[in-house]
Length: 234
Image (cartoon, rainbow, N blue to C red; front, side, top):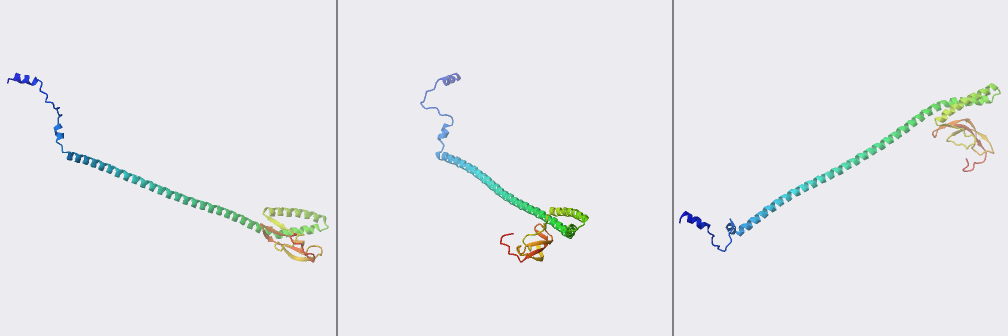
């Protein structure tokens, strides 16, 4: 057959056999072993499961780490709160101690001032006694100049008593009152049937008290022979 005849023959349509043309490689798929395919599928699934399990394990570890960190943070917060409460309690105790110390020292300073004032007043009491005697003597005198001197001495005595009062000192002068052995000393008695018994009839020397403490009791004369004082009557 010549070259021209072969080209003509290739151009002619071929007879249809009735079977569809198979794509390239189709014969190879039909030749695959179904068990191998199943095994490959299982292997893929196992690999996927392994990957998922690996990721799940990693996520669980991360979750556990975060949970532990959270627990540690909570423990640290609880410990910090406990330390803060303890520090606050110590501060409150320190504040209370400071307040007590401040009050105690203030009271001590007041007591020291009172003791110092008491010492000064007690030292002046003999001079006050002399002024009292001088005033009584001058007023009982017939000399006009002496009575005028009594007024001047009385003014000095009043100024001294004012200083005593500013320091908290008070005069004990219980004339006409029931005898009180805590503030007076009975050095003489006088018979008097009309006055209640144990009534102070005269003060021979005045006493002084300061801050509830008797610096010096008054020296007094009390009545005897009279009726008993009714209970509850001052």
